[in-house]
Length: 179
Length: 189
Image (cartoon, rainbow over all chains, first blue to last red; front, side, top):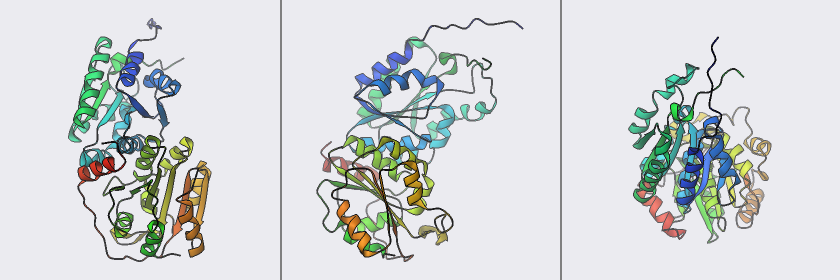
């Protein structure tokens, strides 16, 4: 069997994403644990000005974001693409009240996916979010992450709109299945 | 057991100025509105299962205020995981009060899980919520009413209510208006 040499250097974009969240004064970060978000979650948890809220399911984070805004704080919600499916009805809260919303979604079920069970929801993420009036920004290149994230987050809070940053599976990298 | 409208009137009769309320969709939204509309109320008209988490978001953002989530057994059951999430966060200023009649009043009074085997107070306690209480009489309710102005750790109360369906009191369904007036009332807009 041939072997593929995987790059082991940590990518810079999760730290850049964290810097964008800090610059935007994000104070609550909801998340369901996810490998692609591991570094960002770690940075948020270590920051005393950010309240990291571990969730049992992603839809809790939608309601949390609404509450944070009602109380005057900005928030972001981190999830994997499968979690988008768990949010659908709760997104009606965002649309009905025009709450700002920032979703940061690590994509599965696309580039070099090993597990076909991830493809079903992964392929529905963009159309589903669009139907829910969540504006999607898909990120393929590491050098685009900070700029696009900053601009999309500005749009969310200045315009009281819902946005999602979709971090493509190619950007995140191959998942090593057999260790 | 308590009658829901009498209970809510007692609970909010001497409402502290710092108390904001999130109500779960359906009967508890009508209950809270029945006491009188208030800019510090955020009524849910949907988002079933989300009341406790909306309350958590407000509580974390406004630590100097007390937040009361007033919701029903069906709404709580739909977001049972939220009790675990709230417990882990330990918000000292969040109270979750569940009016439990063991049925889904909006849809034809079908039995809920609390009519069966589920004990929400035990669930809340097992999740690790700081203070939990069962309320099924006037004395217990008087104690809960007092605690709502003074509690200093996450509070969960299950209030056993009679399965009556009092006349509906419908507040505005305009979500944007509810959001804006709430934010003004808490001084963030």
